[in-house]
Structures are given as structure tokens and as C-alpha cells.
Image 1 (cartoon, rainbow, N blue to C red):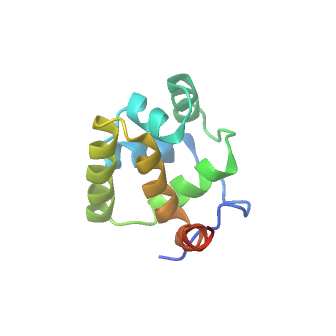
Image 2: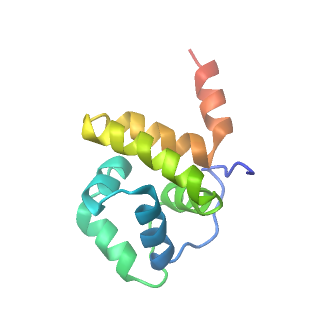
Length: 112
């Protein structure tokens, strides 16, 4: 998988793609919203629109997740669900960022 830089303008992501990705991860709307740090109404709105507008980082994360195989999404979803069930939302977000842009995690680790 090619890393998707969160600072670049990502490709557009459809509302249907968000729904499919969230479902493949096994996340509920409230859990997905919590991981992304947005309200549930934002996720519902994104999923109901053909071409929703949202933060480029969300688009990059969903775009990167779309490039994964079902078993990969299932594994990531299991990690996310464990983190969410224990109210470890920053850990869950870090997992998503690592999937979307592994170089960002490497760079962050070098900063002290």
C-alpha cells in the first residue's frame, strides 16, 4: 500500500465509501465519530451525501482504508474496537493515521 500524506489534497471520497469503510471496520457511527473526534451527526451527514465535504485528513484516512483487503480491515477494526471500548480514542486515531500515512508516524517518533 502506498502511504497517503495527510497534508496533500486527497481524492474525493463518497458518502457510500465512508459507510462501507466504517462497516468493514466493524465500527458503529458513535464509535467512528469518537475515533475521528467529530460528532455523530457529522458522520451521519457524510454518509448520507454523495460527495460530502470534510477535513482532508478524514478523506485521506478513508481513502487509505479503501485500498486495503477485507482481512486487513477486519484486523484494523479489531484494534480500533478494543481501543474504543476502553475509551482510548487517541490510540484509535493513531492507528488510523498510521494506516493513512506511515511516514507521519515515523517523523513524529523522531521529534523529541
